Every structure is written in C-alpha cells, then in structure tokens.
Amino acid sequence: MWHKIVPATAAGLIAGLIFGSPAAQATVVFTAGNNPQPDEQNVLYGSNQTGASVTGATNQSQTSVSFTSSTDTLATTANGQANLTAQDGLINQVTILTPGHTFGDMILNPFLGTGNPPDTAAAVTVTTNDGSFLDNVTLTNGNNFLTIRALDNETITSVAVTSTGGFADLRQVRISGVSTPTTRAVPEPGTLSLLGVGLLGVAAVARRRRRDS
Image (cartoon, rainbow, N blue to C red; front, side):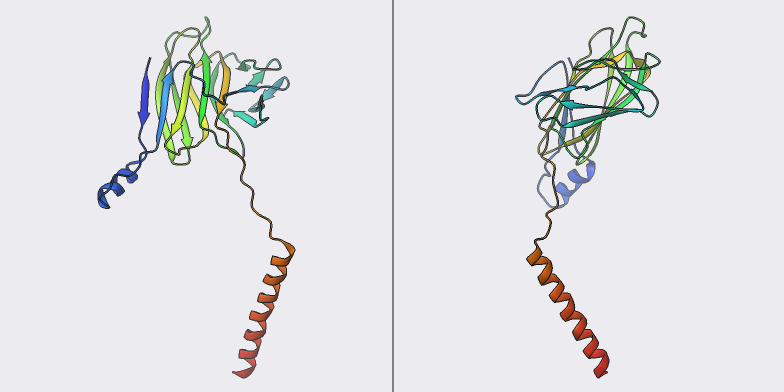
C-alpha cells in the first residue's frame, strides 16, 4: 500500500517564509485501495455510448460526470456502474470531471486484464483549485483501486489517468464532496432602475461640462 501527500506549489511555502508564518499547505492524498467517504456516490452510465467523450451521472445527486480521452475512442457497454472501455481494448488516457462542479474525493479502479502487459505504469494527475498534483503508480493484473482525497480546503476539478502500456477498462468510479454549482445573482428590476438613473445622471453632468467649457 502506498500513501502520499503532495504539498502545494513552492510559491505558497516561500510566501510563508517571507511573511514569517507558515503557509497552509494544500494537499492531495493518494491511497491504494477502496476507501469510501460518508457521502460517496457511484457514477452510473445511462446508455451505451462511444466517442472521445462519454458521460455518466452520480446515483444520488444526478451530477453529470464527463469522461474524455485525447487518444482513445471510449465506450460504455451497459447501463449502471459498468466498465468504461476503449474500442481498441486499451485505455491510454482518460480525464474525469464534473462540469460546473468540484469534488473532494474520487475512487477509481484501472483494471488490468489478462491480455494486458503486467506491471503497467500509469500517471495520475489531479487538478485542483490550487494547481496540479501528480502521482506515478504501477498497475498489476486485476483490480487497482485508488482513492484520491483533497484536504485543507482543496477542491478537485479533474482527475486524469495516462498509461503508455494501457489498461483494459476503468471500473467502479465513485466521487464524494460534490460542490453546489455557483450561480451569478441576477440584479432585481429595482436595482437595474437605480443603475440606469445613475448612468443618466453621469451622462447629464458630462454634457453640461462640455457645454460650459
């Protein structure tokens, strides 16, 4: 089992030294194994899909989850928490994100089939509100559960898995800590009216100054 805490960028640490107090370290923890959080949700696929991008949704909040690849034609072959595969039998790159949302935890299982080369190297890149965090793992035959957690007010925007050797499929994706989407407040009619009156007043003053000059 491997367990890794990756610190935030060096800039934050330097700032702490300059101003005399330690900067809070944003962290992402990578842990081998299946370690669900209290609000963990399964990601389900609603239909058979193929393409550079396919979608699913969480089973409780119905949050949309997108799977995209820059190298593969992805495929989902059944409804529910089925496997994500590639048409050529090997996934070399896949990025997972929740459009309009962030999340705090992800569990995923890059599965290595018997036809895949053993001990395949993979890079897992986690993008957060603070930057990117990278961990290199070795996939072995069968299940390769990985739990990724963001700590210290860190929020995850995407997780990407890249493997030159490739893996057979991506199984049992789960996420927790899904954010509520932020919406921009729409000004009320009264506020818009006041703003319009203010702009008219500014324009009138400008005209008067031009006329008097």
